Image 1: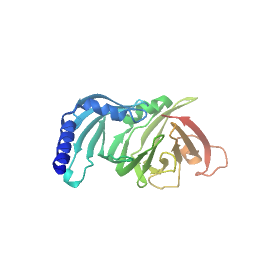
Image 2: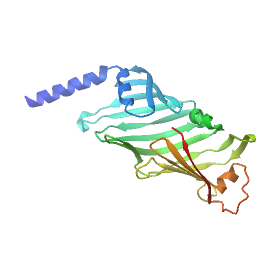
Image 3: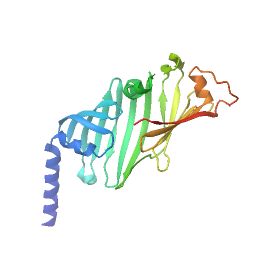
Image 4: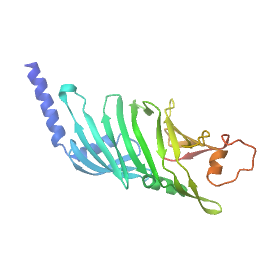
Length: 247
């Protein structure tokens, strides 16, 4: 009798997931600061919508729940995020205390354009994202994001445009590698270096959960951007350190 009750309960839960409208998934996204799902279509089981971030970045989101009860009671959610020449995909494995997100694919500078436009920066090219795993640990007060292992994004390079006090600047930048590493009690830090003829770190970005990012700029990065540095610092020496509100 007990077995029948359990099977019946699972059947009811499965039916709810299959037929419940996709609009209900918006409730889940309200738990993530700075992220909103709009224009949901389909069902919780198989649906789509537009994911919008407070930074102005948006992309189309499609998802499908893969649930094999014979392998366990925890479903996997296959997802795909698309925008202009951008395709990121992977799976989400939900849990009571930890969510696991697997991700890979590529995105272009167009995805970051709304965020970078606030700083008068335009970055072209394509970012390649290797297969990576992100762990999200949520407590009653905080949400911690970490990488299961360090990973590297590869940027194809291109003509970067930015604005200084003397007007519009543009410089052709070679391929760069962005190394992401988890930092205790903070978001993953990003270190940027040349992909070829690597001479060490050029730029380090350390974000904080409050939306600020600590930026360390080396002499090598300033000169890579076509600017002169008259001091005696070595190429890998940090010559500028700032903190900015980004998200």
